Image (tube, rainbow, N blue to C red):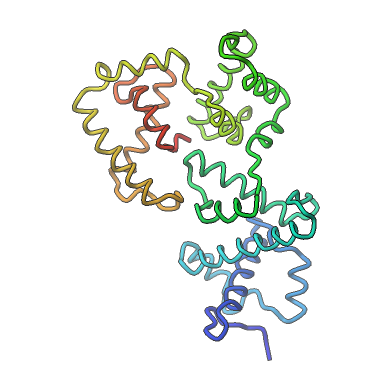
Length: 301
């Protein structure tokens, strides 16, 4: 005679997950963290007597936000949104969801941003499985479009960079713009933010083969044996192999490094890279090692 469904609900587990998911959404909404639950959906649930805080459910889930149960609930919410997108596609023949469909539009934006973070090697909620599911329905990531739309001047030079031949890349304006991108990238690496270069733009440039180091930087790769000692290089290689293993075992970037030593090593690579960008030389990191780490999708930012 009521809507107080227990969680978990052994008789009908999917109903229990539905209740859990919507209580999480409600908790996020009232705290201003997220707005995936519309007022209309809240009204419809409240009309049938749905309780948002049965036995302190929202507070309990806040305290255990990293539990397996909450992860399952978030996956459940994600699948609901994926189903809504598929339904929209079948009705309209495309996935260009208008901004007035606020919840679904926001969810799509979040998927693109998380994909961008994943491709740049940062922590991301975008897993391989989620990416595969979105690719299977023809989802457009629109990295280049999002990068272009950020700044018309940036878009103009980006187009020139794609079209221009190798022999003509020394044009002064384009060369100056390229230098500016590298400067903004160094700022992004150092502080985690830049007003003139966002992550979509970084990824768009990387996809067309843009180099974040100059020819001078490339030449510096030959300096590795003389700059980085053999002993330090041996220790670095050991940590790098650990990092490779960690990346292989954690493709979704969702868990921290397994050892304190590896965690400290990752932090030190970022610190040494910032020094290298500033002074073009470092006792602890060579340009060769930077190239090796970049190819392994090391999270510089």
